Amino acid sequence: MADADQPVPGIHKDLNETDLGKLAQGLVHHCRNISPQGAVWLMEGDLGAGKTTFVARAAAALGIQDVVNSPTFNLHNFYEGSEGDLNHFDLYRLGSAAMMELEFAEIWETPTDRFTIHAIEWWNKLPVIFSRLPFFRISILSTDEDRRTVSIEEIQGSEVRP
Image 1 (cartoon, rainbow, N blue to C red):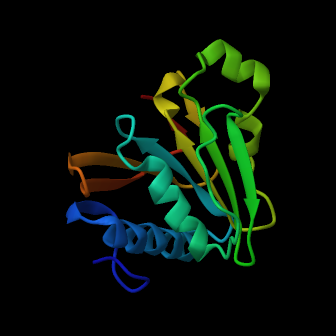
Image 2: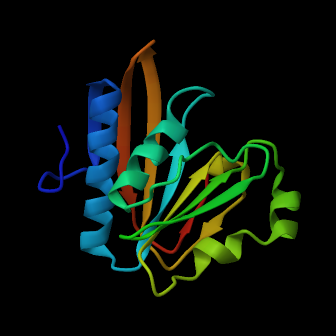
């Protein structure tokens, strides 16, 4: 299972919730090693697949004490931790025009002075995403009620299209 010493990008099969948490925390450590300013996580998966659970487990590695909930209705939640920050977006209810009006894109496009993970659920509702931070595509597939397969791919470049 993933930990701070083990490479994270790849396919991880038959994960229970504990394994999912270790993988999420391992990815935070991996991101910190390659970019001191953070990363953009492009979260994919069906409703209930475990995207928010993955992000919530990553929050622990950032020293975040708050309960991390899905921002489905308020669209964006910000959490500050002792080891870094978390911007958690859920674009499920938005079309691309509404997204651009809200100007959320500015949050993940420009790095800050603190290590920050920008986790974007339903990112593929946008025509394109830009950032100067590294991108990771995280696909979560529910294989049964309490098991998941997670694919993590580091994406090169400053823009990503669905």
